[in-house]
Amino acid sequence: MNLPNILQQLPEKWVITDLRGTRINLMREGVVTLVGVKKLESEALFVSVEGGSALRETAKVDFAGRERYWWIARKVNGVIRRVLLSQLNIPNCTVDEPCVQCEVCALLGGLNTNTNESLFSRTKLQDLISVQEYVYDEKFRVRLPDDPTDPNANPVPFQEVIVPPGTEFPFIVRIIKPSRRDLALFLFGNQIADGLGYGNYSKLRGDATTHWLLLANGFLHISAHDLLERADEQPIEAQVAKIAKSPVGVPPGQVLTEDLAMVVTELVGSIKP
Amino acid sequence: MQAAYVEFRLESSTMNTREFYASRQGTHKYLTKEAVACAITYSEALQRSKKDEWAPLVSEFDLDCTPAMPVDVRTLKTVYKAGDDPNAGLLRYGQQELLLPGSVFRFAAWGDLPLLWEGQIFLIGKKRAAARVTRCVLADVEPDTTTLAEQVMPIQVPPLTVTQYGAFVPLVLTARYAIVQVPLQPGRPRLVVNGWAVPLGV
Image 1 (cartoon, each protein chain N blue to C red):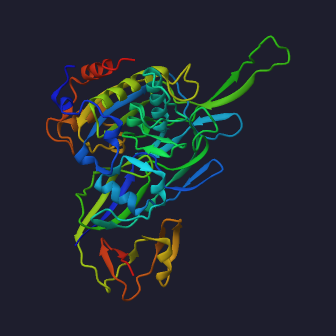
Image 2 (cartoon, helix red, strand yellow):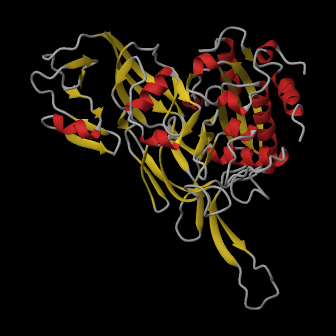
Image 3 (cartoon, chains in turn orange, blue):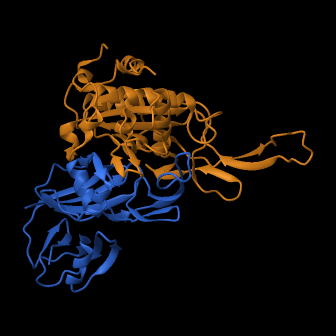
């Protein structure tokens, strides 16, 4: 692989035994920070709160001065785990019973309640909180009966508060004690997960794209709150470009922005399903 | 001795598990002093054993701190669904109460402190939510038994030692730790940082 120096410095990959042992310090063992914008390409429903009767709604959160759509990080993490387990054909490891031995568990962590073994997740996704303001727009929909010709079957009406297509979310990810393989696995899983879709009924909706803006070999002190608070004056992309020029917490020369798309393609391509 | 008064705001949701019963997980509104110390020193244990849950909480740090107390904290009961097999694992379907992004906490720390500054990001709580330091006041302090302050920070103590304090208000009581508000009685050692007193051990 023709990777820039900042990634060449990372270890190629870890085996599970490298991750056992005592307490580590994130600053000594290293962190990679990825910053991007996830954009919904179709409508999505992230059911996080119990609505009344036949109503299901995406959660909202009051953050950075307004109500915003709130896409809890575990809803992205879960899809990425399923993608990796299936694409890499990991034997004896499922979402119900993580083996705590494979490279997916090594990256995303796991708890096996039979053996009581647990491994810390080294991939830290921040919750995704929308740039756009939350709008309570209740959609009235109807579920048709499985057999529309059955005279006793009736359509079932229901309501949904969905996230509209085009909604954007700053996406901040940190990988602790990273290897090049970890980074490639995450980017690969994220790319396929974006295409498969997130949230409820992802067969038909919840598709997203991720526009990666920055990769830093270090723990970048970047705040989603600040990005969102200033988003009316300056787009997220411009703010991140500015941060990349004087990144806090990352040594000089350890930030990648311009060739990032090419590097991501190369890393994703290095994973052979 | 160096001391710090810190306020921080969550950038992502997290929790400090309270009850976990009948498919319901609740959260305390305080984060433990261990969570605070791990966060500000950026230290993490990659592997855990279930036995660790019952190990006594022993300080592994060159600093001491209060638990993080709520300043402006909001919670929400979210629905939780994980996995495919309803009988496998722990919480598969139920309610999970989360501390919401935007919630603000404060704590005090003293001793051999790491670098702390406004704008700093650290990871704290369950699933290690990112948090941003919104206020940081550093001071050189000398603990004594006389300095007064208008406000007193809650402290975290082992549950069996709580009765050694002549008076206390329980804020969080668990089998492993208690977070209590104790009055600044005459003769009790304390340190004061940014107008907040921290009662020290009896």
